[in-house]
Image (cartoon, rainbow, N blue to C red; front, top):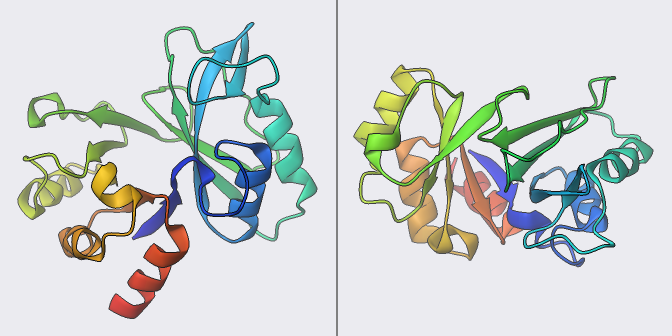
Length: 191
């Protein structure tokens, strides 16, 4: 199971910041960051972007300066996909962003609220952890259709080993959490 740091939390920096994302990547985790449009640029921001919100270009430049031994992967949660400019990917293959509900990036995930919204137009789905329809049978069916399953929500953002165990048993590909180090330890001890 992939551990995804929700808004790059857990590394001693403000969430959704370039510093938090770089620390997260440097520690070997996949950060999730919220992206919005400001003046025609993609910027890191959970809510309405402030004037000093860093751009995705600034983030990618900072990641390149880390001189990583392997490609950095990011989960970019595009908040305004209709107005969002193209998010510039790093052309040397060292940064591989994948995102929710954006069709022009390497992997697209659709955030679904109900089983009725499931479709094969994306590479996977992001499900809320408390969705009544989320169970091992549905996850197996999504896998059979070639879709990956990521899980996010209040029950997995914080430390919840009972829910983590259920999701691990279901075979979901990834979990977004504010406790990435604790989830990684849980997976290592469970595997």
